[in-house]
Image (cartoon, rainbow, N blue to C red; front, top):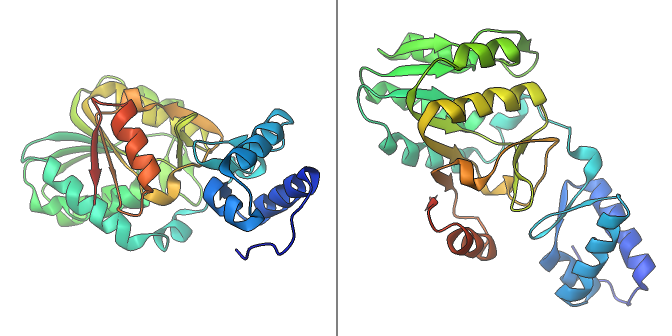
Length: 262
């Protein structure tokens, strides 16, 4: 974004912020400071006012467009986004899994990258609602694969809803590996689909250890439905593009949380 050559009145600046949010999913305070040549305090005031008017949602480091909170790209579109970062996250996560573990594996492109590494482990029991993951493991590993039933989400290759939740409830697993569409310090982990959120929550309840696999582009974002907070997970694995501010906040505000940056 180029720096504006002339200062704007507050009302003009806030209008520009909203127009910028129409073109992209989120805005960050440092970027807005540079764009408008104003202080962080000024931008935070703008965002607080716009949030109170119900036209955007403030996050820890900026704001998101409320109209995009319910949007979710299909699995095919997600595969091309942050692919190298997702592979690094998966390469770290596979080290957390031991032979003969029972694991719950959430649907998602990052968890799919982890699934591709699971054939290196033996005697696993894997519970998943992701059809692509289930087929891959059936064809390439000796894992005992349990697929959660229920309606298929068109375009996402997974099951969701009350049937999947009910099937998950009796299981006790060693570790759960979850994905998330969005994370903010105010709203926690969130996803556009209520039905998908309920499956994630069931996996969290079933697990002795909960690991969240989320690339840095999901930070300071908010989706439609919150399914977990930082207090619900044991370890967060993300990539090294995470901002220094977010790293510091995670480390200082949640001392019991394990943070892995890869």
